[in-house]
Length: 272
Image (cartoon, rainbow, N blue to C red; front, side, top):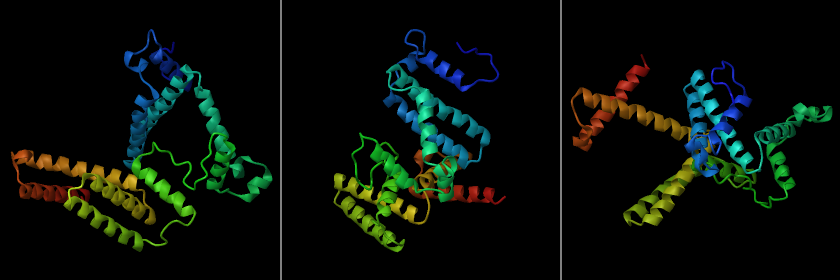
């Protein structure tokens, strides 16, 4: 068993720790009962926390969060190993082979190096063709269903644009957004729950398209918007506490006044 008083641990130590946690007799009761499905949400969460640390340029936090994300890989590999599907070493081998295969301009022969960087989309298309279990011939093939919805929308749109199914400029996308908003407003007016959901989805899909046309990532944009809302709301709470006010007792006008005050306060701090 891995010694607990080491100062320098290795990937082998992490693998041993994971095996110990999953041991059916002496392991952790919580870890023993986890499955791929129950761990998947944590995997997504850790990936977002890595992105958050990068956005905040916190390198120590990034180091910690990368460790948490690595644990997710080790966790899934351990569960797969228990079912004799694959091991952690197989994961490493697979990604090494993929990186070498997708970078012939770095790892190939001199002729491949001279050709320069290949078309990744073509390489991935060829990889799918080489996999006997993959039969999807669509231009949209290879977009994972489990991706966050905004990210999946962006990937679907990007793949469609590869076969010229796209607007060439931003203007018609903005016009489409106005149409979708009008349809959403109409669905809300008629109080049609299914239609509201459908039209709201169209609005969000169109918002992703706008982000893509202006070279932005809608997922990251929303992530930043979430952080901005949180900062402002926490400042609203602080201002309300200073004035001995309770948010639940305030009307919309008073809440709006606090919101504007919070925005102004944070803006002044940002500008020194």
